[in-house]
Image (cartoon, rainbow, N blue to C red; front, side, top):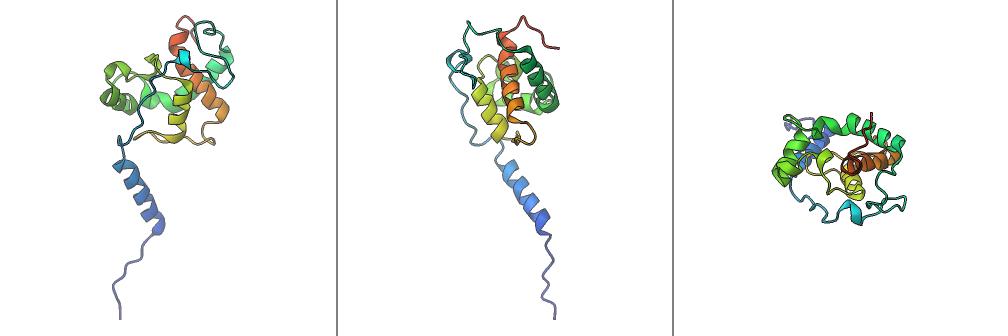
Length: 154
């Protein structure tokens, strides 16, 4: 006598459940952006980011940060249409604050928290994907985009 119970593939059920939780939470409960500017916060090295220390960032660190940005971030956060991160930030924060490389209100600590934990539809990046050193370089590269406008990293 058959009861009619279907076999359930629990791995796919778990993946479906995780996706449903992630999609269902897109854009909800996003933390507010910091009110602090880069001038008010020090980086891990203890160097305070103010006008006296601008331009003192190691070019190798900026190059590493640029490489990480191009590999992991640019596809979603570059300027122009078709970049989901930029489009989502335009909805959330306005068009003038939608391109992360042109913003002067982001601080390294905030960038690192968002990269590690994700935000809305942005996935979290584990240390096995972006190492701590790479993450520090990425945060410094993004912050430096406006600080060192006369320095071009290639």
